[in-house]
Image (cartoon, rainbow, N blue to C red; front, top):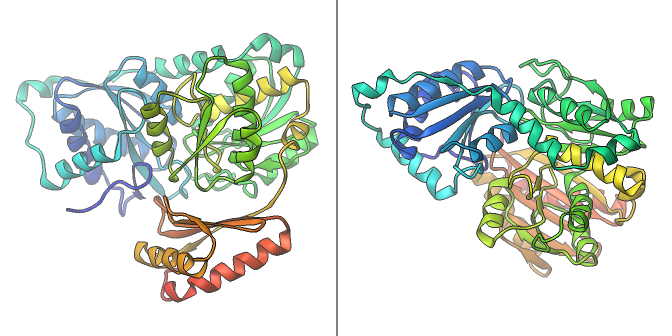
Length: 457
C-alpha cells in the first residue's frame, strides 16, 4: 500500500501530483472514515487549484453520505476553531508554507486538531483499496453555506485579550499577509483591539507575487523595512494558511518562532492562571529557551517536529500553557490547541501593551546564539542516509534521536532531519559565534555529501 500523508496532510504540485481525481478519491476515503451522516466543515486558502480541489473533495464526501458545510476562503486555524465549535470534522485545502505550485489537503478531527497518524493510515487504506458507492438517497444532500465561521473565529481571538489595555497603548503594526487568507483575519483582529495596521501583500493572489509563502526572516525583509519606516511597534508575517506568524520587533528584527514562543509562554503563564506549567516544542527549537523557561517555572517538553505531534501530546497529557515551533507556529492553549497566526499577533500586541516595554527589549532577555537553517534537495532515502552519517560522525556527543538526529556540543547544537513536506534534507544549527556556526555548517555538509550524490537540483 502506498503513502499519501506527510508531516501535515497530503501535498503535491497542482496538476501533476495534486489533481481533481486524487481529491475526489481522497474525499471518498475521508467520507468513509468519518461515516455517513457526519457534519464536515470544508475550507481552502487562496492557492492555485483550490476551488477545483475543494469541489472534488466535497463531491467525494457527499458520495459517502457526508453533510458538507463550505466555509470558503479562510485560515486553517479559523476552520479548526469552527470544527471544534460544532462539527464532526473538517477538511482544509492548503499547502501551508510550500512554494506556490503546491496545494494539499488536511483532515481535521472533531476537537479541531489534525487527525492522529494512525487515523491517516485508515484513510490511506480506504484510498488505495477503494470504498463502495453511497446509497442513492444520500446523493440528494447538497453543500451548505458556513461562511459565518470566519466572523466567529475573529470574535474568539479578540475575546482572548484585554482590548482596553491594548487600545490604551496606541500601538501600530505592519502585517505581511503573504497574498493569502491571513488578509481576511489578522488586520481585522488587530484593528478590533485598537492597533493601527499597515498592510503588505494583503491582496489575495494565488501566484504569491509579493514573496514566497514561507515566512522566514529573509522573506520578510520588506516587512522589516516597513516596521522601521513607519516606526511601528511590531510586525507579523504569515504563511499561506495563516497558522504561522513570524514576529518582527520595533527595530525591524525578525525572530524565529521558538524565541517568540518562549516569550509568549512566560507572559501567558503570568496572566492565564491555572494552566499546567509546561510547554511543548519540537526538537528543532533552540536550546536557549529551556533555561529561560525553567527559571520561570515552566517545564519544556521536547517533541518530534510537527505541529500535529505537539497538539496531540498536549491533548494526551491534559493540557499546557502552550505549544510552539521554531517555524512560527504558536498554540495558545486557552484558545485552541493548534497553531494560530492571528492569535499570535493579538497576543504579541497584548504582551507589549501589558508590559509597557518595546518588543525588542522583551526579546533581549534571552541570550543570543547565531543560527543557520537551510535545506538541501534529497530523496527520503538520501536524507535518511545523511542522518546516519551525522549520527556516526558525532557519536561521542549527546544526541536526541526522536526526529532525525540532534547533536549537543560545547556551545552549539546541530539538527539534521528529513523534511515531512518536501523532498529535502533540513539542516539547523546554532552556535555562540557566527564563525563557529559557518564552520559547523560546512562540516555537516561534508559529512552528508556522500549520501547526496545525484540528488535533484
